[in-house]
Every structure is written in C-alpha cells, then in structure tokens.
Length: 193
Image (cartoon, rainbow, N blue to C red; front, side, top):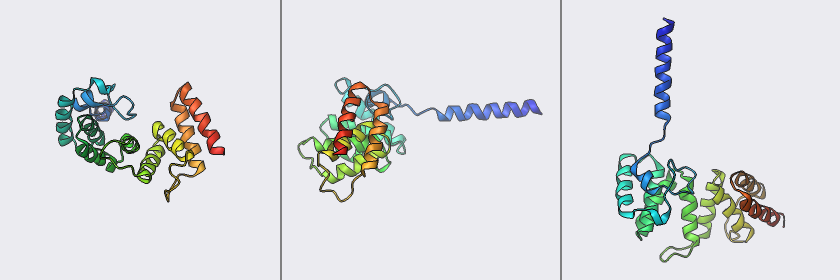
C-alpha cells in the first residue's frame, strides 16, 4: 500500500512539474524582447527580428493561447516594428488588459517618444508606469520617478506618493547594476528636494 501511495504521489508531483513549465511558442523564439522581465526565452534584438515570420507566428500563438498576455505583447512589438501602429497598439492594449507589466511600460514609452500618429497623454503614461512600477518593473520604476521629479506628471490628478516612489527606487536598485545605481542616487536626491 505504501508503495502504491508513493507511486501516486510521484506521478502527481511529476505531472505538476510538467504543467509548471512555461509555454514556449514560436512567437517567443522569434519575438521575445530582451528587456522584458517576463519573457520565457532569451529574446531577440530588434535588428534581428524576422518581422514577417514573427508576425505570423505570434498571430497563430495568440489565437491558440489568448489567455497568455505575453503573446499579445510580442505580437504588438513586431507589428509596431512593421509600421502597423494601430494594430500594434490594439495588441498591446490586450496585454495591458491582462495586466502585462512590460506592455504597460512600453506603451507609456511609445507615448513619450513623439511617434507620428501617437498622441502623448501624459496622465495615461503616469497611470501605466505607476501600475507597472508597482509590479516591480525596474524600467517603469526609474522612468516614473524621473518623470515625476521632472514635473512631467504635475497635471495628473493621481500620482504616486513620495513613499511609493522611494519604494520604486528600492525595487529598481536591486535589479540594476552600477550605472543604474548612479541614476537611482540622483533620483533619490531629486525626491528629497
């Protein structure tokens, strides 16, 4: 009886381990973004992305797994590179609706870069980056504090508190190296003023 119980337990443990493995699709292999903290593969630099193959693979993967926000984000990434801005923003929007922190950061970044046809809505950027920063996204944490101390979010009705921004910097400091630490030290001084 003990042997049967051990076999059943071992089978269950193996089954749970198999199901715990992340889903890795062709979309991940072709379109994962290296700075995305939630990617499941190494990532592909922009200049190395095979855009037509990545678009096709990500569309297929997202259709098969609509519950995986990462795939919507990656589809948005390659559509944006292809100049399909409206479709890219729709795919990013789906990832944001599914609470994907990299999509929140990237859409905010896109809105601040002055791309043609994309209106800057600084209070939307504030909300996206604040949400992503609360999810421990280091780029959002540093960018949020930089914009806040620079007065860019002053017109927004909701903003992170000084305590929240210090916590953002604490979270980012753990993830960033030496140069990031220098930036964080400057931002901490800016927060004190």
